[in-house]
Image 1 (tube, rainbow over the protein chains, first blue to last red):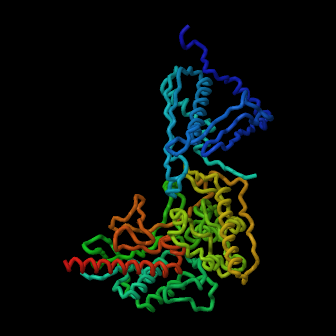
Image 2 (image 1 turned 180 degrees about the horizontal axis):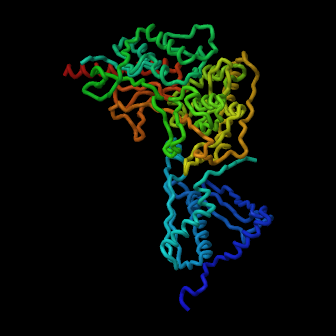
Image 3 (image 1 turned 30 degrees about the horizontal axis):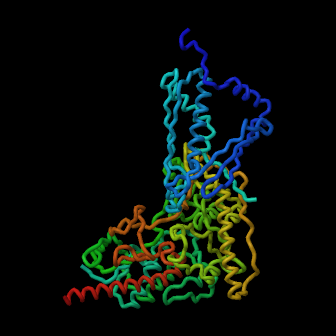
Amino acid sequence: MTATDLPVDNGVNVEALLGARGALADSPEIAQFKWRAVNSWIKGTHSRSTVETFYGLGDEQKHKTSFDFDADHPEVFAAADNGITPVEYVLVALGSCLTAGLAAVAQQRQIQLRSVKATIEADFDLHGILGADPEVRNGFSDVRVNYQIDADASPEEVKALVAQSQKRSAVYDVLTNPTNVTVEVD
Amino acid sequence: MPKVTTLVVGAGHCGLAMSRRLAEHSIDHVVLERGEVAHSWRTQRWDSFRLLTPNWMTRLPGYAYSGDDPDGYQTAPELVRLIDGYATAIDAPVRTNTTVLSVCPADNGFLVHTEQDVWQADTVVLAAGAGAVPSVPKVAGAVPPEITTLSALDYRNPEQLPEGGVLVVGPSSSGAQIAAELHRSGRPVTLSVGEHVRMPRLYRGRDILWWMDSSGVLDERYDEVPDLLRARNLPSMQLVGTPRRDTVDLNALTGIGVRLVGRLAGVRDGRAQFSGSLRNVIALADLKLGRLLDTFDEWAATTGFADCDPVGRFPATEVPTAPPLTLDLAGGEFRSIVWATGFRPDLSWLNVPVLDRKGQIVHDGGVTTWPGLYLMGMPFLRRRNSTLITGAGADADDLAGHLAGYLDSRRKQGTELVGR
């Protein structure tokens, strides 16, 4: 048995995903999801977000457990550094979304992954959020992701994996395309 | 080489107000003008343009409106006649058709090169206008080439644009007016809306600028506002001057069929991308207007002013439920884009090291960091009304006083040096 004969297993249940796509054809409404987080202020710039429930597949859903995420700002911002900054969560979200997609696509294409490491970096000009320069935006001016991938595939196939994962990434889409945002006060 | 104590660059209302004040101080001076008096009013306004301020507010040092339509709004040709008449009345020493090529520091003052001469001046006042060139965002470069584009400075009338859809970028005074005019011409308009300053033309039966003027809002000083940078970068008021005293806020525009989208964030693959912040910029503008009207009501209550209609509030701005976030610029729906994204001064001829890293003049209420160099007519230069015609007088008064003091101190220093 040669290495190429080993069943490819990236730990992604592609059959289930493809099955879901088939099921959607019959009842498209089950595809409608709502993601939720509840954020509570603690002190200063420190807040905690709790993620537990979401809606999807036509019903209320629950994670196995409730997850907490502390956000704050580092000491150079005269804050207590009780957690990463909100913008760093954006990097976390982008990296984990792209990597999850990459693993799924690799599984689907029968490419065995051995190691995948992404480094995500964003450029950010403080003039924006401080209101110190009206021409500088509040958000990132540039986002770069660098992948180091060891896989049973040619460099072109690996590049195609990375490209396809961007094409199907929710967070990549959220960052690269505008979204309407409504904020209300009760 | 001609010598003069003070050279004023620009014979618009600012330069002329300064000329009048300099004359009062007996400071010999010359006003250099690239074209004719009131050049930009002659050459850089659209055909239907009228002043945003009512006639009674067209005040200059030694001049007040005395016509029979104090509540009307002047057209550009009417204003040109007025400013021209003012220049004659105050006998301003204007050299027309004299383009300044450079202003450089020199021993004891400045050298000013024009197309005709090289002037030596002890002091220079820059009054060449805050809006000489359009500020067009970088994304303009990505617009498909088949789209006709025009800036608000070059816009004259709808006939300049092809038939078909127009994207007007910028909801402030120019953009709102141009959007309304283009839409009425039969060209369906989509207006891209970022931060803006919502204004009704009338409040409690009086012109909104009457309230601002009377309550002292327009006289707010640059050294008293909490955030001067923000105050100096505020978009212009969403106003139009029409005989019917129309309001040109977003509700008025959607009422005639203009479609609103968010701030233009980018153009990619021929598609315009709009920010999803439309709801919030609208909420900000409504809240800000509410606070302004509160100020007026408080002023009226405190001073006992009652010669007006009762207190009222305007309906909230209607927000489209799902404004499009991207639109295809290459698909044929859009034939043109008008950039109403603001203006900036042209300082290409200024060779005095007074610019910050962004190319803007560093100044304290019009007194630049270079001794003897002064600036006029910029947003919130010394007061909220610094860019209104009525604001030029007080600013010129302050700055001419400073300039006279500077000349005096130089003279004293000179005497002391000679005395030693």
